[in-house]
Structure formats: structure tokens, C-alpha cells
Length: 229
Image 1 (tube, rainbow, N blue to C red):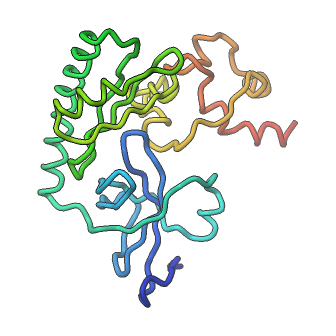
Image 2: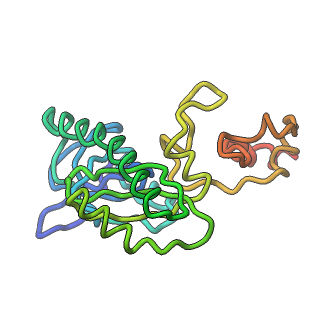
């Protein structure tokens, strides 16, 4: 099996493409001697702290060429242990309580935004609050109140309607997990032209995803149809 390696303090490190975080962020992470497979659960170091990630594949020149860029590069700390999984479940269970607390505080402060989800980073020192809003929102006072309430660093992240579904939706019309919630790093560009070329029904109820936009899967076979045209 081909190995993608780079020199790190004189040691050849194996690089992997990894998904991490609620928003399915992509990164390239390395370790000197860990041999990992697709689906391996690992702890990685990111700008947000230590996080649990899932290995997708090795970072070969071919796979890296398919990425759009913008991903981070850092190191793998270790493989996830049973105690790590237990700790992660505890953090995730506490996210719902934090979400309700955020909504209550938001009501009291009368700030015009909708909090979609609270993500507690595995390292424990930061929570990320995903929200939607019409335009820009001054949330400086809100961050101070939330930081005092949770005793951790608070990061606010404004998202769009597709990102909202990535965080909330689970199963698509096909009966499988929605693509944006399980592996898509970025939403592909989809147009009504793609639906017409594939001769699918133009009924908005049938070609629209749970986000109300055109389904991402209309993009998957478009090139084949375009080539056969």
C-alpha cells in the first residue's frame, strides 16, 4: 500500500484526510507510526483544541489534488480510547442543556438570532454556537454572559440554511443519511439545468432537499449525462 509521508523532526510521518467537528470540517493530519484505516476514530489537534475525528483515507497526492484547499494541517494525538468515547458522549449529552440555556439567555437579552446548535469541543475548553440571523448581529455582550455561564471560551458561528440542515437533518428522501451531514465538506453547485438534463421531475417538492434548495445529489451524475449529450 502506498504511503504518503513527510519529514517531521527526522521521522517520516503518515498523512491522513480526516473529518472532524459538527460541520464535517476537513483536515490533513499526520502521525509518525500509526497505521489507520477508513473509519478509524482518532484525536487530532486543531486550532479549536483537541477534537475527535474520523479517518477518510490516506492523504496521497491524488486525494489531496481533489480537495479544494482551505483545509488545515496538524498532527494526530492518538487513537480514541473507550474512556475518550465515554467523555465525548457526556459532552454531547450536555450540549442540549447548553442549547436551552443559550435560548433562554437570548430571549432575556432580546437579540434577533436563532441558535441552531451548541458544539462542545472534545478538549472541553471551548464551545461553538451555530446560529442564523438576518444580517450581522452584535453579540459581544452575549459572549460575555455565555462565557461566564459555561466557564469556557465561547465562539459564535453564523451559518446559512444549507449549513443548518447539515447540523439538524438526519435522513434524506433516499432513506440514507443526508450527504451534507455525513461526508460533504462543502455544498456542491447545483442548478435547475442539471435536473432538466437528467430528465427528473421538476416538481419543487421532489428535487428540493430539506434545506429548501436543490438536492446535492443532482450533481453526482450530471457529468455523465453531459458527456452523453
